[in-house]
Image (cartoon, rainbow, N blue to C red):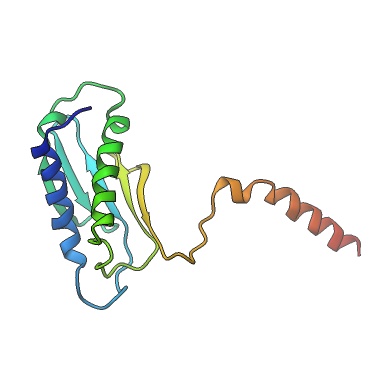
Length: 149
């Protein structure tokens, strides 16, 4: 999906407006993730927090009545790209959000489609499938040995 420069600016503007709610204040004082909900029927991008408080809203012309089953797959790289630009420009460092926190793409039912960007400290260990692979077997072996002795 190709979108215009004006639409990209609208996305960035909405993201900045949403993030302005978390600038300043006590450092690392808020626990939340930021949810991005694009709507293919109306063309809206709604940004809200974990408490469903709307932080920003914008209209993306290219999304209005977008007819495709792959809508979220098409929108994901656009949103991810704009978030990475904000991160590279240092705009995400100034937020008073407790790390780790995520920017999450959600569907119309507010169910997570994909995590767009994870902000964490370098010493945060995140569990993933590769790390957990074989853990059940290792724990079962350990428990079996422990119970025999």
